[in-house]
Image (cartoon, rainbow, N blue to C red; front, top):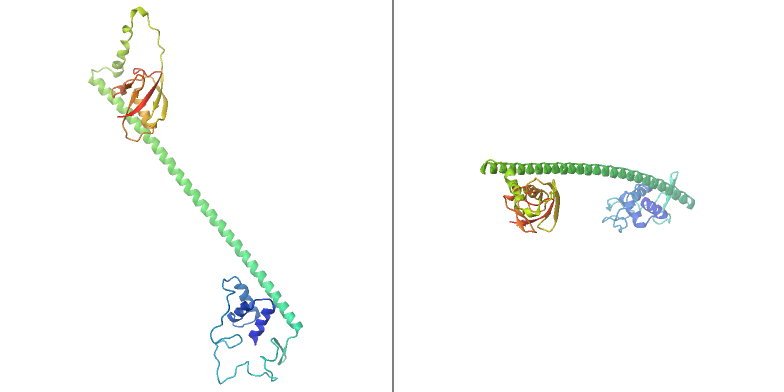
Length: 310
């Protein structure tokens, strides 16, 4: 009747019968302390409150295997030394008194329950301390993992920033080289044209029409007023999409410099060819005009140019 004793003790301590029966069965009826340990370890199991179904052939209070020898009477059926049957003497809890057993008094039962409750309280406190320590360890591990993840993110951001800086530097270098190639090409074209048209410098040939300008003025108007010598020219360019670019150029720079500026700073698709024109009076500039200074083309001190598709 040890199983019944353990079970009754658990029930008197306030445990649910279903849980108490599971604890006694799973611990193999090895005592109240083992049963309490099992209950505290498994109280969070999702199936702890499911109805307990003992194995076939095994009932609480029977043998461990659920089989009995028909030639041997079961212990529950054998009388005790005093000729009493423990199943029917009305006492579930017995204590040893020398060589005999006697039922526990109510005072002894209360003392035993009090001792077991104190033991359960100590074990629960130990379990809470263990859970707190585990929670602290988990929090430390979580923080350590968070720091490691933050370091990885920072390193990735630094690497990405370095890549962007290198890419921008390469783009700047490529732009600078492209501009230099355009300037070199313009210089070569000038030299070739100068050789082609008789050895005079292009600047001299291009400025000759301006030198012939004063004789064409009527003599009756007297000497022309002195023109202000502008060294710079402010050009506003209207792009194909309606946006505008404004920049200042030297008066002696060729119109090709304005085209290069538009190619480098405009939003026109790369490789798209275009031409420049003045709206008032309307004038479409040709490839020959690209080599003429802005002052000669009448774009000094300021002018508006329009980008048009070829």
